[in-house]
Image 1 (cartoon, rainbow, N blue to C red):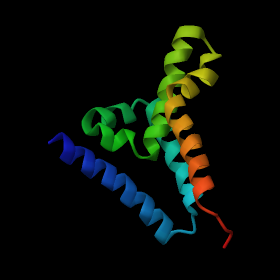
Image 2 (cartoon, rainbow, N blue to C red):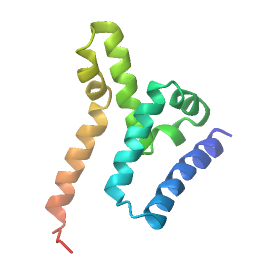
Image 3 (cartoon, one colour):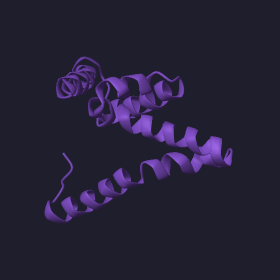
Image 4 (cartoon, rainbow, N blue to C red):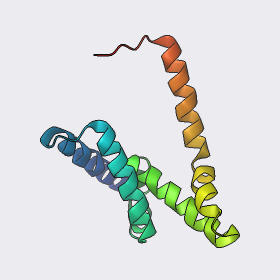
Length: 117
């Protein structure tokens, strides 16, 4: 049942993003920023945590999950070390994902020859 919930929630998030790209003039980069920001705002309001508890990876893997992790890390660190935690908490919570994105992006850039359209 956990797999089904994760698939449905993750699929709905991705379908919503695809609809935004297809039916509006928003670029994929703007949808990315919108989703990350939405995940952070919803976590700040305490809403996204409930979705994560329900759907697990279906809510944490898509882009709003990255915003959720940033906000969650910042909130946790502010309660521990004060206002400085709002800057360091999100980055420390998502450091593994950020490092992987930079590393794999670099490797792919070595393998392929990107061209402008």
